[in-house]
Image (cartoon, rainbow, N blue to C red; front, top):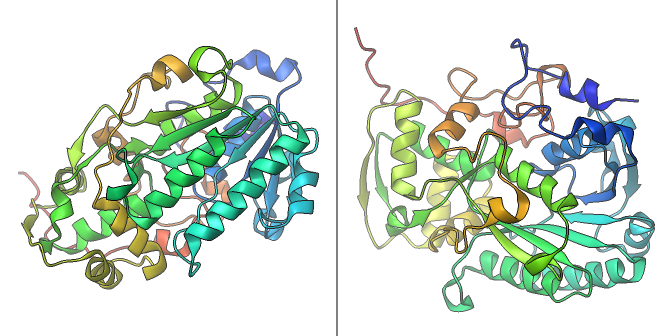
Length: 382
């Protein structure tokens, strides 16, 4: 069985553990941990959260539609794997039996013809199941969005509806709302990376002027792990939404310019025009990035809304990340640690999901390891 020490030792080869590794309570290994079910363990955030929960001393189980995807992960023998999805009521109830905390990390990205209805129905079934199983709390990962449904894209509107259903349950739900997640392999980060690297000059939609509050994947994992164990007192007693983000608020265009600086590229020329609709923008992204249209379209539609923290009290409710919240620039540096862009490691021996979550994992999407051609690299200083 893989121990928490083994998980922490899966380093990328650099001496010493990166910031954040081993920040859990060492005494947690000596007492029975919380029983936590993770739904979405094979996803980008879930694959990084599970080893963190194990290192924190939790008794982790996962519900996976394709358990074979977990065969090679280093923590496979440290968790209980249940086969099934949210649409399988019997499998869901069986997985929830005896669980203290259910972490719900799955989202539809528009693959279904009517994904809003599908997400609403699966969330309602999930809530009924956690109530029937006697689960103590739910931890759900959602997205930052403005108040009011009239401005929301279909994707964000569905996320807001899912959060409302969670918060309306008799089981307290902590809904962690994050914006653009920065880390190699994150769809939002990969979109920034490919757009900025491939296009020294671009005609852009007006949403490049919208304000965004990004967040490092390290901090997302920290806040989610804290939500599993934080006492449910005060405003959190019956569940609540918690906005999380970096200390920085930037426009999307500024995020690309800072990326260019950190990646050693010349400053990018951007000419916003109003004629690029979300549909046209998603097709444009399909030409420039390796993201599939079904993934790019809801991401682009969501960018027409500003995504900033409303009530900035996550550090008070959940506790701050070790060393404080990661700045956008530092999050980029962690994601760009591999020279000339990321390359997905073929084996888990070269990955460290616990100590270095901003690096790519073998389980990340195939498009996450695609290297964009670099155009407009800055001249080296003498």
